[in-house]
Length: 362
Ligand SMILES: Cc1ncc(COP(=O)(O)O)c(C=O)c1O
Image (tube, rainbow, N blue to C red; front, side):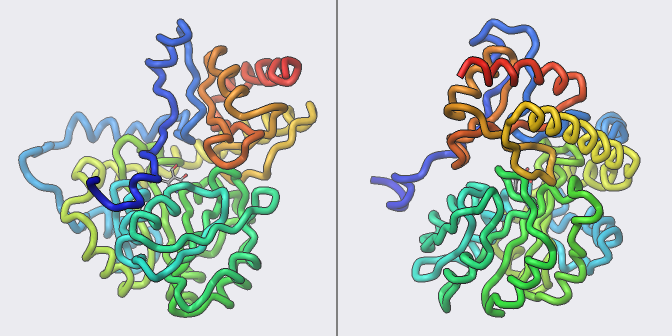
């Protein structure tokens, strides 16, 4: 009755279970949430200082251009200030890209499964969505290229991918970008960029300089631990940035989020700690799982996709009863898996026995 026809077929985002609900439902005291790829180490303690000292002035609108964080980030990334766009999380920038560049009569190409929001917002704008099956969790770039035609406005590359955790190599990416028509935008979603091992990190500035049709998305939600404040950004040539700024809400990021992001950006010690702890705990946990014959998808992120005997929903429920909230692969397009965020060392250590139990009960 009301609204666009397509909305009848789409669901609102299904978020992971809330800790308080799980405690009540299963009568548990301790819950470990490993479902949304949040940061188990929190965020820079310097951000807390900001909360107690900052003159909030909540009656005043924030700086819609996000001038201060823009300057900080432009310096750090060595890009021009007008090559950045800020969003209420990088989620919002995905929405803005769809709003600005997709409409009925045009199409968009993406992997399947991948981060669900690309498909969701593309459909809402009335674009045709071409989804190309992943191979062992990796984007199949050649098959994606075959789908590209005169009407392809946007291609989505999730690098590293959510939910698989895989990262396509920079050389494969370049081979792909060389063949994409110049009129087609390529979105490189690097939400987990900071977690990528040094030897596999892309030379992003070089890519941006060579491919003017590229949009890179990053976020403060993951390695910086500021998911609750909602701030992410895109890097792109200024002509594309201008278009996204036209469609974005006038005051789409709050002053608190902007200020916190500046402080988080400066605290490299915290970031390095997060990244190195994640790498160490992930390596140990993956080794354990592999030694016990679990298939684990390659991961360059702070989460892993694990194949389990049986279905994802059953396994996730079994873990939930023991106090671990993980994400069922059934919601993510990999039915026989669960996605586990890498938590604190102690929690992952305790989870090992529960994983073995999972194997023996199915
Ligand atoms: C691949 C990917 N892109 C984008 C986002 C959105 O992150 P945010 O809106 O918190 O910046 C996420 C969050 O899980 C993600 O996994």
